[in-house]
Image (cartoon, rainbow, N blue to C red; front, side, top):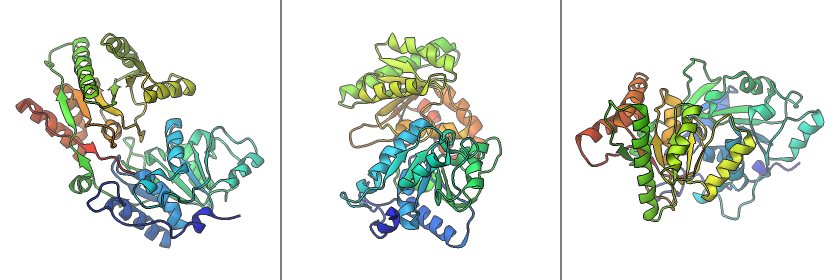
Length: 406
């Protein structure tokens, strides 16, 4: 059977981005690719690569098979939304073509969106027809769906790999004994102290990405709130400021959406009528909804039928929808991973969107970052400094805006 990635070896252009954005690989992406190749040239242990949120892990998932030449790749995503999104990107090798690493008319791999659990050896063997399979632990973990041939995949890539210590993820490593494993993450540690299996072969610091220009300013808008106000009045002030910003962005010709972060599912549901009362078409999305209901809400958000979405931690990891440009922070995160993911969520930009804006009361930003700073987080320090500076001057200081790239 022809091996797509072996046949396409040599077609990948590994040149580094210079002065033109979205043209060539970023330095950290090239560093990661070479580090993984170096690791696998002498070791069989799983490789861990840490890149900043929004820096371009999807490009690595596309490029690495072109360099390693596996017969079949399994990409494991933590959620159905990411499974669908990554499948759509890899099916057309979107980011590699956009940055010029592959020709526009390049051959494309046969990529399978894996949904449901195989019930027999024959069903597992059907996956041999594909170059890449994009799945989730609930669909393909040997711990939950036994029976896969141990040599079915020879490269397994875990996205958002801080989930990897879970038993369902570890089962992949123990079962697919002939495969190479790559763990991709922005945060190679967990608050529960459990360790991602493998060796950290490359880490590209956030500050290095800032220095190279991978980040641009985000507007921080402090909601006009006094610390002593009760939660109801605080929420009202945040909502008014967020809707005002959304309307201003749209008046300036930007097709933006509003991303609202609540602390609990009940709080998210309670915020819906508040925003509806301000004239915004909005729905709350949570893990209590079925996957079909979640996908329907996502589709309405994409088409513009919804102007805003209220979440707790849904759409948190890796989800890429550049039109989410106004973020209303009603409840801060108290841990590093979701904070980084939240910033990365609305900060991604493309050619059709304007600058993103974070709206929150400064005292809540300070409460959140105070705990994060104990972990020595540079990104959290930037947020904290911006919030403090907001009190000292009327002009909005910069946070971070991720320049959208593969």
